[in-house]
Length: 214
Image (cartoon, rainbow, N blue to C red; front, side):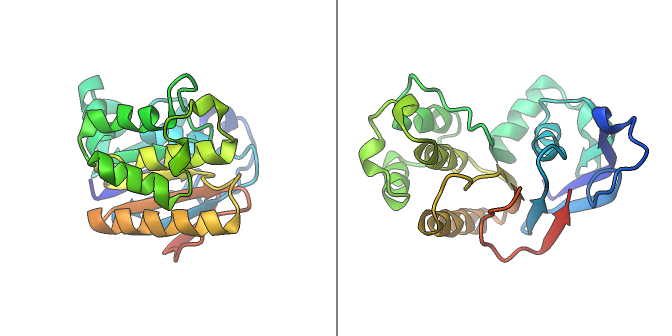
């Protein structure tokens, strides 16, 4: 996948508003593979909805979203499974960690579907993000910031053309945020992938090609 194209896309819940001032909603914009994008937003302007629409598990929007010219509403369940396995990765704002599984089990669950990384590579990511001692601890017992790092590692355990990170560092300090930025750039660089980050304030420090105000 090389391009994600939004054409006059708008959450249906916003449709009754007289005016919507946004550089994303109801605009014509293209995200290109290999580029880095920051989407700045105020709370309640639909940034998580945007990720949900593009990832294909919500359809309550107007307009068109297309991948390489094909409307995503036309994809079958099987095609979506393939896209999410090989083309799109996401770090959800709410993380979607399984609390009863260990931190490592949460990551391996994803990696077994993709066989993208060797276990030693995954353990190296735990080391790099400062949580090597948390691999065998149940994820539900970790702090939110630690869970963010587990979810981040999980998001890297697949091939992708684009990776979405929805408020990925809301509970991380500057040092850990810098580490995440470095690891993200390394992985995206290997795959020639596009990066799309959302933020309501604190954001990953990357050299963004474009910044949009939602």
